[in-house]
Length: 254
Image 1 (cartoon, rainbow, N blue to C red):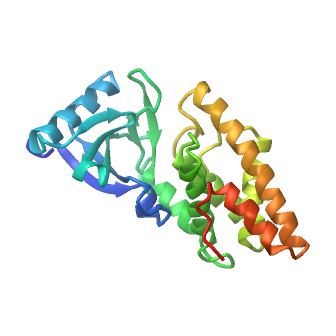
Image 2 (image 1 turned 90 degrees about the horizontal axis):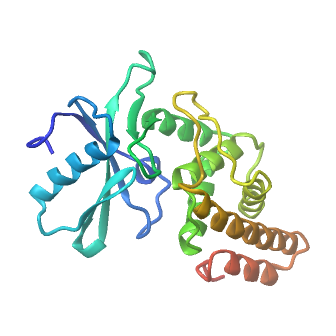
């Protein structure tokens, strides 16, 4: 990209940089901070990145999948999602806020502050629940992938971190049930950026995908509650059966 564009910075972001990626399922995400003049349409910036990647990797499938340009190396064995960003001054001296393409169709832009969101996840992951914000995020993302739920991984990660930060203790079966019931009860409502750096964080890219996601969240919450109820009355076989259903037959064997 440096041969084709003015690159100010390039860094990994998303699940793997946060420690919440799912092996063989999560993509590798990166943000390229561009020094070129920001175009009116974000589609133009995506096309710049796509053309730059194709010039270097002409045999690799490269396509635009908002808000990123997706490069599928090794026939999809390793997938990179590269997001073009333009640094703004809206975060002041303390927060780096970028304009990135919106996930919806059209040429719009949205705020993103990936370093601030990583700080938030790390903060929620500290004692007395050390490691649990990321553990819960990985479990809920695994459910998303295994059940093909069209919810943003970033949204789920922020919701899981927010949930764990409000708890005095953590038990996997309890907190999986609680976070799924929360998602169901508030109907995947958009959430405010917990760091106050960017705008609202949305669960789905469209109303049609949200309808599908809500149906799957409702089913998941019911199964998680049944697993928890079985756990609470010391019926581990029943608990594992419902967890197996919840995770699409991918829950680890006992």
